[in-house]
Image 1 (tube, helix red, strand yellow):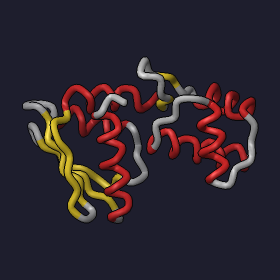
Image 2 (tube, rainbow, N blue to C red):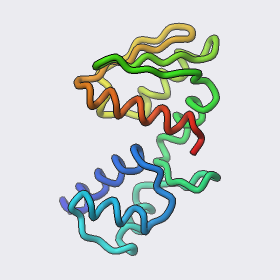
Image 3 (cartoon, helix red, strand yellow):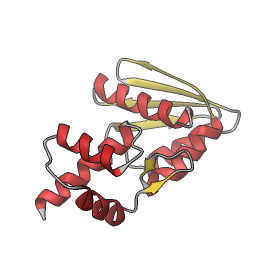
Image 4 (spheres, rainbow, N blue to C red):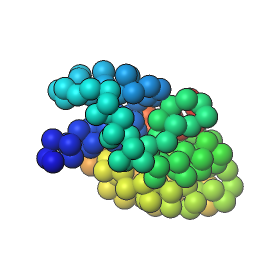
Length: 143
C-alpha cells in the first residue's frame, strides 16, 4: 500500500510539472524517479486518481482542471523574484485565480494575497517558486 501511495504522489508531481501525453510517457517519468512499474499499473493509478486527458492530449489532475481554465482565461503574466511569484490577471480576475490556486492545494505555496488583478504568491524556497511559475506557465500556454 505504501509503495502505491508513493507512486501516486510521484504521478501527481509529474503530471503537474510535465506535459504527459501517454501512459508510456508516465511509465518513463516514473522510472527516472526510481519506480519500476508496468503500463497496466499506471493505467490503474490513472483510474484511481481520476486523471483526465484534456482535448490538447495531456493528462491533468481532476482538481487542476478548474485551475487550468482559470489560468488560461485570466492570467496575463507571471514573474518570479526569489521566493515570490507575482501573477497579473485581467481586471477582476485576481481573487478567482487565487481561489483556484488555493483549492488545488499545491504543496509549494505557503500562502497568497490577491487583489483585483494581481496575486502575490509566497513559497518556502526559490525552487518552489520556480515550480509554481512553471506550473502556471504550463497552464497559460494551453499545451
